[in-house]
Each structure stands twice: as structure tokens, then as C-alpha cells.
Length: 111
Length: 113
Image (cartoon, each protein chain N blue to C red):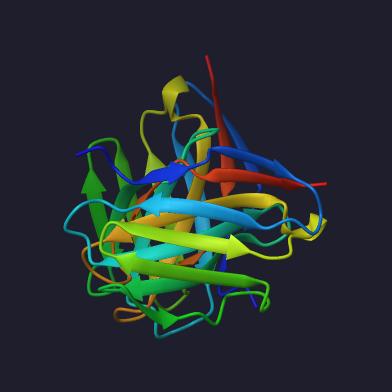
């Protein structure tokens, strides 16, 4: 059973605009959340994370928002660049257990 | 550091053959994870090790799958006998803390015909 869900398989955004990728989870015990980025023929690479004690974490153009009551998190990329085109995976952890991944959202940033 | 190293990068084999995938984690990382990625199921955890000891293998799909970690710098995932439904990309990852940031290898694309 998928405990982490990314309901949008794909997203297309114009360069310079904001990209918003969404993720929902079902397990209320999850306390740490991560976003990974994956290019074709490469492994996923860590992008940004957030602990459940926070509701926002920012790193340059990337910001992750966490809404615990809604069991929802989102990744904002501002401004979007063509090099951001990749598959983005949301992942969640429960106090030291292994990561649970969503199926990914393919982001295409067009010039 | 060279990052997580996996070999081979591509493997094509016939049904019934034994397949062995290899992984070298980042030096100093005491957790090692094996994942499988398919279109249907996404990225799913197969097994993970802590200090070379298997901790959770509940994701291993069948007895045909086995994994070992004989030392801190090497792990193998073996499928015997292989079946076409095992075709997927297999990733190895390592980390210093369970459940937190993990570093992935480039993956092995396995095709079983």
C-alpha cells in the first residue's frame, strides 16, 4: 500500500515561473520528509528535507512546505530553470526507519 | 569521494539465469539499502543493512532474491532464478543515519528475456 502519493505524474512549467510539486502521505507517524531529484540514467539525488517540527524549509530556489494536519507537503521551485527538468520524488521516514517514496512527478521546464 | 558505485550498469539475461548485482557504498556510511524501481510500483525498498547486518528484508519479493554484505565496502543482490517480471532498475544507496538523507548509486538496469 502506497503511503506516500504523488498524484501528478507530470508537470510542465515555463522558464522563470514557479513550479509546485505536491505530495500526500497517509502515515501520521512520519516525522521527516525529503525531496529527491532524478535525471535519466542516474540515481536520485537529495534535494531538500524538512522535519515535522517545522512547516517550511528553504534552500535557494527550493522551498518545502509541510502541512501536518492535511498530511501534505509541497516543493516550490522559484524561478524554474530548464535544468530543473527531472523527475522529483517525495519521501518520508518514521523515526529512523527506511524511506518510503512516492512514484515521482516528471517536471518539464520549457524555455 | 567517488559516491556509491554499482555494477554492472546494464544487465541482459535469459529467464532462469542467475543474476548478481554489486554495490560499493560510500566509505564511512554504515547503512546500505537496496531499492527496485518499476513503472508500476515506483521505488520500493527491498532490504537494508546496518553495519553489515541485514535489518529488514520484508521488501524482498521472493526467496529467489537474496542479499549479502560481507564487509563494510561491498554488497550483492542476487536473483536466482531470474524471471522477466524482475526486469527493473535496481538502486543501491548508503547513509550515515537510517531514514534520513541517503546517497544513491547510478543503478543497474536489469532486463530478463
